[in-house]
Length: 502
Ligand code: ACM
Image 1 (cartoon, rainbow, N blue to C red):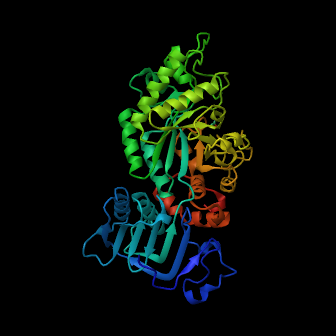
Image 2 (spheres, rainbow, N blue to C red):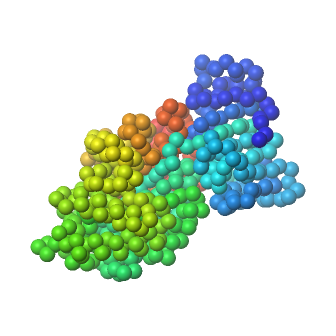
Image 3 (tube, helix red, strand yellow):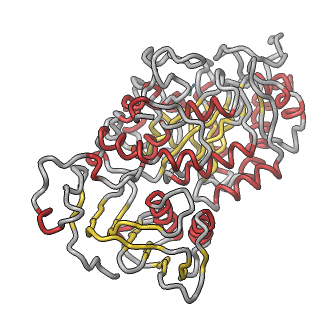
């Protein structure tokens, strides 16, 4: 590994000191170190050493990529193409993607060194991919004659393996083009799990070959004012591959045994015989529908069939079976059986927090969504959590109090940027990571989705990647504020948060 030739200054979250032009004097941390002295990176890396010099990248560069750079090399090539930089063997400067074996970098960490060349080293293709994303944020978004970069040595390892976002495509459908853009945007910020809430009372969004009425009937409905539609299996396979090429895992959720009106309207026999309302539903209520848990001979074969097709489509290690907002004496038994079915299909289940009442294998992940839910008994049994406490993580809530077309049932002041950032990821016990959620009862267009998701998804990125001890809201907003051109170049119609000066 090359080392930075110039005197290096370790930049902590206190900033790099006011020393870019005079590295010698920088060894004393500057009292007046301003947040603006951090590099404009979100999420902020674990360690940044700035040498004080600059590296110039011209419009020709030589790329050296290790074998197995399946996603990182195309990501680098896309970046260079956006900036009109061509790959040439005779170019004066070089970008290297190097595979190393350094246990401290783990599965996703990387080093990015910019001195007389640019090199990214990692144990894995994923690590190299994230190094490329950091390089992407350091570069401008517009084509220039040449590009100057700070000489830096960055070492970066994520805090959490699960850095997620959930989109409710069931209440209101989101087209695949939107999801592809969303995956690109997530990847830019090192987010790596896209949880798709594929079924609910108002719609069923994924084609299941054995039960075509699920999409014929359930795919044609939506929440009032929302969009109907569904993904064919071919479209979903294409999306899975698109996401994999960007280090994003699509995590499917089939919400069971409640939130199932679209399924009941499609296949009436899944409901109990005394249920009379079996039409599709476009309202806003929750908690009124369920599979008939006293008809195990009907519902379990159906659950098995549906989940069998789901695991064929989605390579994700984890499959979400929902489990929220339903009361039924047979509920714990249902959840235990559903998580067991997922296990028998060779995957591991996720359930919303209520699923913790069932006798599940401790491998089952639980997704916490009510801040005050008593999850301790499940932690005591060895379960791990995905953190989505609603008063920090529900991005269908307002960017500010009273924002039109937003919810406030979890927090009447909404979930402004600072609130989202203040989530203490250490407070809830064993967590695999964080996941923000956007329910779509009130979010019916791509523009509205962008407005609810951004810039708050940049918070999810920093909560998921940067160590809790490193986080600083003032510095975060200062860095994010400077990344506005990156969001613009990604076509994001973000909420213009005043905190960012936008
Ligand atoms: C949920 O918000 N019902 C998980």
